[in-house]
Amino acid sequence: MRESTTKGPVLNPALDPRDRLRMERAFVLPRARFLLGLPIAAAVLLWSFVGAEFDFAKLGEGAVNMGGFLGQMFPPTWDKLGTIVTLLIETLQMAIVGTVLGTVLSLIVAFGASSNIAPKWLYYPTRWLMNIIRSLPDLVFALMFVSAVGLGPFAGILAMTIGSIGSIGKIFAEAMEAVDRGPVTAMQAVGASKRQTVQYGILPQSSPMLVSYTLLLFEGNVRGATILGMVGAGGIGLELTTAMRMYDYGHLSAIVICIIVLVTVIDQASAVIRRKIT
Image (cartoon, rainbow, N blue to C red; front, top):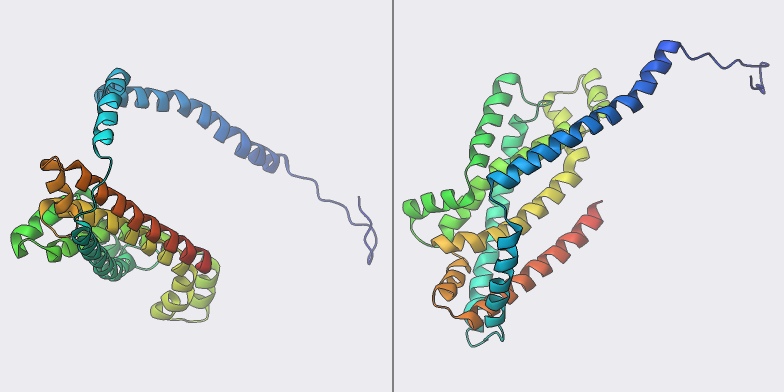
């Protein structure tokens, strides 16, 4: 019993036994499921180790070879620094254009893949489309576009743009699905249209996550452009592959160092922007 300052004593209501049992089960059942899931997870992990032929002995033997390979990469040679910088700029330009195009298309597709925005007849086909795109690596798209438009950065940009729809489009859709339903319900209750609900109820809540995921996409596209270049889709990847095939380890080391510097600078700049928006 506790004293009220206005109308006398107020009795604390007794908790119904069924409610108490339900609240206690909320703490008991997850623990039981967790303990049950541990041996299942261990069995799946062991099965994966065996199926993938993961061998710690081979890893130890390979570490020696990797050490020798890394030893051959030093000291780096900087006689082709101008070529490296030019190709890195091209890689960065590819990533910028691919990110902008990929973000715009992913956002459009995400509207159709959000269950709280799109009708069922649009939601499921859009999700299936993203699943199909996501199941194919960007290298497959790069090879396809290289054969279609020829060698060069244009094919890489197209590959990054299409690949973004499957990956970041799904994340955009889930970010819009995870918004607080309160403001959305309130706007619908006062007669707001679908466009107004999306514009003023969903996008303002999800915009920090959308910006953060866009920055993540940009970072991934910078690294991805390096890989796409290996199949002739522009960027520094082709130069990297050529250095490896020619056993030009000093030049290879210089390329790797420059890529690390570029990715680090982009990562730090992205971190600053994330702090500003959150």
